[in-house]
Every structure is written in structure tokens, then in C-alpha cells.
Length: 453
Image (cartoon, rainbow, N blue to C red; front, side, top):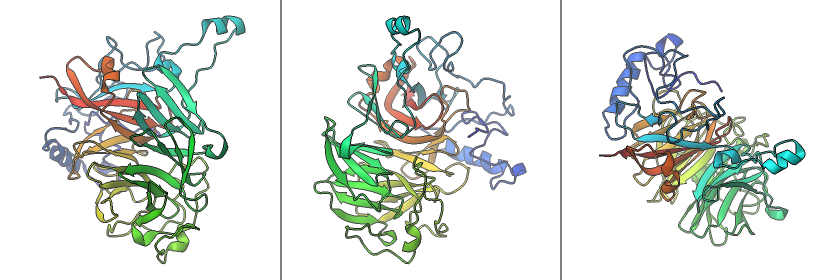
């Protein structure tokens, strides 16, 4: 997907993909765009990007603060390293920075692994580098960035302490086919949503297979989250979130309750009259969660009553509120932990606070909501009231570019591992980790924080 403009700088015609200009027949005029920008800037704290008065940026002009690109002729690393280039901040100077792009990973070379010189001498060719295939969900645990890798049919494990990359690809009944998302509990148990197998597979901390949540037929899981003694699973086939007991895998309830198609062998609440349409299944084995449910879907409801059309990713905040990205409904639906619908976030469109294909969703300790969009290829950050604070993304060619972003994860425990990438006058409070399905930067890491006093 080709990016139409820069995101960090917003001169007159560079407001796409978030804002359509009136000359293109879009729904938002330039005056609306400027007004929206001033509205966002008024929030304070996390601020949106600036609107330059100098007019459109030249396409050939480098982005301000851009880091060196990957595999340059000089042999520089693709990421900004200490002493190389300028750090990329959001918003850019002169506004106070709140986010910094830190580093990205795609293969072993990004961890410092080099092909064996002895192997190259004997065989005459360098040994191939192990690489991430096609990532979707991403988490971080025990010094590892753990990526659901549909290209490798397993989990790609980037160990930042050991500087190694390996693929967790179990065999037997626990074999993975299309792992989409993963959640990890305090004991290190992994819950992996596999959309092709129609199950959530469970593995202990040592990698041993423990069983499944959900039955083999009928469900198409795309997201999984844990809260207390429950497992929350987004299901494309029933257009709902299915909530199971963590201890025995028993189905407890669904959200919303009136859009459920019972899975054979499970006692679920009755489906509504649209149940027949719900049975239609996507054919894409690669399981881009947002593609599989487009055919046969009912039209969007005029009023947001908590319905889900294509639930993709799910996250739960510290108070138990459940956030579900709906790629067809173009919004994030929010429920309490017992399934009561609370409100929606966003709407269809390419304006500020709108979504074209929302995917990964995450919440930090300050109740800020992060949503990545696979169509506009940006990440928007909202406050707990649903107001847009800032958005991040770069044009193609930048070290910080997002390329079909899918998953996002907020981490507080591993900030120290990225200290060497942080600008001297910046303090990182937490990490923002985003997976990209295409390009040579499959996992991008940002730091949210503030400038040193």
C-alpha cells in the first residue's frame, strides 16, 4: 500500500491519509482539518504534529529528523544508532517530544548476529539469516519480543538479552498453522489464537502443549486476552467475543450476547435472526483478520449498540474494560468485563480519530488507547475520554515507516534494554512495540516519555 503523505509534518496538502482535501471530494475540508488540529493541540500533554505555514513539503525533501535507512551503501545499520543521524520524535521540534522511534527488527542481523566466516569460507556462500516471516500479534516477556508469525507458522522469539532469534514451531497436536495473536499470563503460559485451527492453543512456560480453549470446528479466533480467571477470545465466525473460564475452558458468556452463533458442543446463548449470515466463512488461509469477514456481512448499524462486524484484536485495561477493534465496523468497541457495552471509539473515515482498517489495540497505565490502522498505516493514541492526542507514522523510506501494521503492545518492564537508542535529553517511560506485516522492519519499537528537565 502506497503512503500518500508524511504524517509528522502537516502542511497544506500533506494531511492525508488522515484528512481528505475538499478538492478530492472528501468529507473534511481544509478548514475543518486546521480546526481539528488546533482542537487536538489544545489538549496539552501529548500533542499532535504541527501544521507548517510554509506550504507543502517537497517529495524529494528528506523528512526532518529521519534516521539512516536500512542497508545503505556506507554499511550503516537501518536504525538510528548512537552518533548516527538524528532521532525521530513525535511531535517534531520545536514542540516538546513525547515519543521517540528507537529501533526495528526483521532478522538476526538486527540483533547483531553475523554469518559465520568459516561457513562462508568452506561453502563459498553466507549462511542464510533467520528472519521474521509475516507478523501479526506481538507481546514482550522475559527479555523476548514474541511475534505471532503466520509466515513461519509459529512464534518468532527475539531474545534481546541473548541477541538471538528462533522460531517456536511445535509438532503434534499442538502444531500451529496460522497464529494470529498471543497472550501470556504471570506464570509464562502462552495462549495462542490460531485462526485456521479454530482454537486457542495453550502452552506452558517450558513450551509443552497443555490443550486448547474452544472447539476445533465453528470458531475462527483472531485475538486473545487474559483478565483474572478468564480468557477473552475474538471470533470472526460469530462476530463476538467469547469468554471462557481459565481453569477448565468452560464458555461463560459472549459479548455482545445477541450476535452469537453457537459452536457445536458448547452451550451458548441463542443467535439472532442474522445467524445464517454469521456462518459464512472467509477463505483466506493466511488469515489477515480484517479480510476474512468482509463477504456476507450485514450493513453497519446506524446506531452503535455494541455490535461487532469483524472483531480482530482485543485488549483489557487495569479496570477490566475490554477494547475490541472492529475492522469492518471501523471502530473500537468498549465493554466492561461482564460484557456490558459502554461506548465506541472512532468511526469510518480518514480524518483524525477515524479508522479505515483498525487492527491492533493496546492500553497503557494512564488509560491511553493505542490503535494501529492497516490502511492508513499509522498508530493513533487517544486519552481515556476518547480524544485524539497524537498519531505516529512515516512515509515510505523512513526508518520509522509503518508497513501494514497489525499488532501493538505496551511494555514497561524492558525499557532498559533500549537505553542505547534513547536520545540523551529524552526519558522513556514505556515502550510501544508495533508489528508490520510487510517491508524490512517487521517489528518497530518506540519509546513514550518526555524531555529531561
